[in-house]
Length: 471
Ligand code: TYD
Ligand code: MG
Image (cartoon, rainbow, N blue to C red; front, side, top):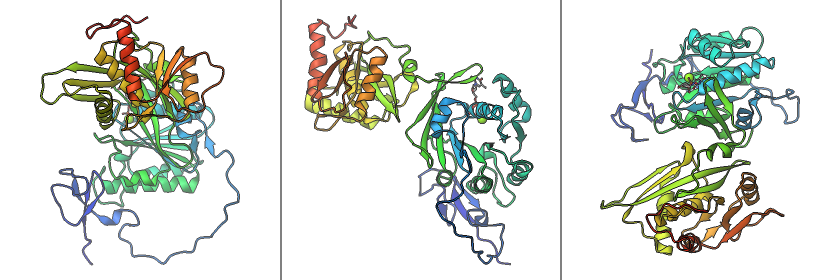
């Protein structure tokens, strides 16, 4: 018999190499290349001879579809992030740092669904039955009818979930623990993960059960193992948050059945995760409006406005290369704003360290935050607090112009609802809400913004050192 040729697969990015090497050409990581048996991968089988293809029946787009294709958990933030509940016959991958609360969230979802009369199977590969039971007790879920198994073998799991009535939802916690007899490599390797995930997805498609897969993330924040897993599943959600803070965000990065810009916000408490239906109140909760360097950004997450505080600290330094540290925002975007401030507004920060933080461990991805960031920077440098009841939004271009952003009216309405009587926004903004009593300051360009902030500093007679008592 011909010797099966082995291949060398990078465990970080999935690149296949013909021979072993210390460093992967694909992603540049060291010591990630492992020898694997190619027959276990996609399209492979356990060394079978290729069989003749069988014709499948072709069908039409209009036809019988199952009633109620989605199953609602009743956990509003989870339903929001999935785009209206789990879809039958689909596979969802949930990634996140260890200890962020993936198992907690899914146990709560499982309990909620089983209370609504669904048949739910929870397969734990990481924890023993006793541990899962303890968590369920803590979450007040122990009395629900969730079916539980602690198993990691793919064939055994398939046999178990195929038995009896079709489950409505199967949870596999986690894909990194799956191993199959058909693949030769060790559990956790690319081939094993891929084979296991593929088998689970096939089960979901064939039976119409919804499948939820938990995946670990690498220290770079991507789902560990092959990127290809993210392409195989129908939806990818990331569960994120700062371990030092008590709230968590479920972010959709891919969704074949819904929008990808929605987030679900949760608060971790002693007895599990709680929905946060108004995230702005949470992110602004511990705000100190009187300190310089803090600006409230009126942002959007999908269809929902979110108000969040950005904090800047600009401090003189004697170092040759000043420090630039950013938490919760893009550091290259900060560099851009510093450059625009210097080039067009004469604000020189070459002799200053700049620290930027988004309150509460939240992450901003919108360019609309530019104006709030610039305001916070100027406010910190001038040592004067910004008006406490004012929100900021607008994108800054390299020319220093302030450009309009989408959903102006939702942002303004949310700000007004939360008691912000003023806003600084791009002068060219369209769709302003009618009959509002708020004060809007229309900003033409960045020099205009800087002049207004610096002007208010002068008017109030604030110096560099004075942390102000603003009105
Ligand atoms: P877990 O769901 O096990 O995380 P993951 O599956 O993502 O690894 O969550 C573990 C963390 O959550 C742990 O640090 C303790 C905390 N936690 C609470 O604060 N309250 C709770 O009710 C539970 C169950 C966990
Ligand atoms: Mg877990």
